[in-house]
Image (tube, rainbow, N blue to C red; front, top):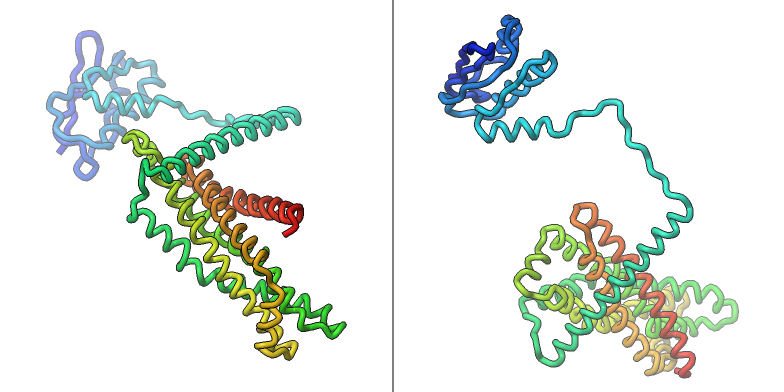
Length: 374
């Protein structure tokens, strides 16, 4: 139980003596009683407290003291808190540290057109610098890996390999098959007019094996695995796990980035082969069921149309796409700020960066192949 007694000193100071336990479930004292006592004593110039007999307390005593303090402030009565326990004094200071400001609205600061351009340029420069630094660290880690100066643990690499391979097969199967089907259908609309529907097999085979298989597998992995990498590393950044690795002297690039880059770059050619197969099967479905082509006839035409150069170009592109997607996801994850919303922004940015990198790399490789003549 709680009880309050009052004493008046010679200097007209009202001493509030608090005894017992001031807890929410047991205290029946209201702040109106204390304030009524203060108002009844018109000669009181200050209020202090005696808490030597105070046993336990919680937020109920803070509520009581805060109301007393507000009343004293509004009636020019000195509120003396030095005799209160240190914890109560700090909580009272915290409660009154930022006074409420009513009717005050923040003024929106609008940058001028040139200021916006300047900020965009600075952000681009800063982002480019961070990207170059990240690529440099990744290159150094790769050199250390191939020279045997550090090894990647199997317990880290195997779950990433599974995430990038078997877990991705259903979506790769669906999208690649549909892409092959669409290519065959669009080509058949024109080829049927000339009685050359057999060339649908050539169209689908060359497009899937040379470009589309690698591109579609890369885009799928950018939206699936690249975003997952960014979310994983971004969450670690929010939880300060990456800072903990740096404190222990462990390179985050070697421990987190290189296993993901290695896993995705190795598995992307295999996923590309699988995407090529599913795309050709999708085109075959259109050729067999809509164009009345024979299965062996479609197979032979596909085999005769596709060259070994096209096959290796597709494999090389998929290998490059795997590196780009993994680097994009890891870069955006490490750049993530420390908030929940920043993790989502990092995942979105990783997908956009990965897809843009895939498109640019496809254009560059296509131009180079044209220049070389393959």
